[in-house]
Amino acid sequence: MSGYPQGSGYPYGAPPANPYGSAPPQPYGGAPPQPYGAAPPQPYGAASSQPHGYGAPQPSAPYSKPEKPGKTQGVGYEHPPPAAGYGTASPFAALLPSQFPPGTDPNLVACFQMADQDGSGLIDDKELQRALSSYDQSFSLRTVHLLMYLFTSSNIRKIGPKEFTSLFYSLQNWRAIFERFDRDRSGRIDASELREALLSLGYAVSPVVLDLLLTKYDKTSGKIKAIEYDNFIECCLTVKGLTDKFKEKDTMYAGSATFTYESFMLTVLPFLIA
Image (cartoon, rainbow, N blue to C red; front, side, top):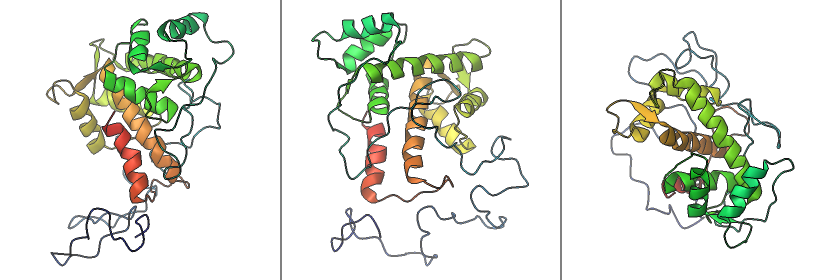
């Protein structure tokens, strides 16, 4: 199997024997086995007689192709810098120095400089947390860590002026999206509102994934099936981050990709250990 060291076997023990006499496992990205009586599977992205998911048209993949570097999405936020290919660079690589983009709001520059108490040109996670709270954007350290990882492609938990600016304007757009879909002004969005919010960001998640997200990010552990703004941001960061990493491997935008064991672990673990 590709991705495992030659001659060393699987890194977590030999694969178990096929105990039930079932067919050999499908390769990663292959069509899953169908339940008894189900219609024959269609290729991912093929046209279907049934509406896709919640009624949205089915594209070739549940996400769109990325814009050219430097361009913004329809919602107005810039893409975080692309990560170096996994397996060739460490997620703990040093962050390169950066500058504020031309035309940055002077108040935002002052906010960063106030947080950068040692004048290093970088702020850490707690400094970023305080800087955001001064703009009525209060988040847990876990959410701050996810923000830093997504906008720096590094786990060193430092962020510079350029990344801080992109992060700040992205949060403004995400807040606007949350408020747009929080139609009853309850301070929470429910399942249908979350689905629409994610669609507006370009992510068409399945009903099963949507239910998992609600259970994870609902502060009542899924009892009311709704999430508040701070957890909405963490939810968006997770969906966006994992999708962007997947798209790096899905070069044909077909909704399937092949990962080595190492690249899979390095894709998922930063979102677990934030």
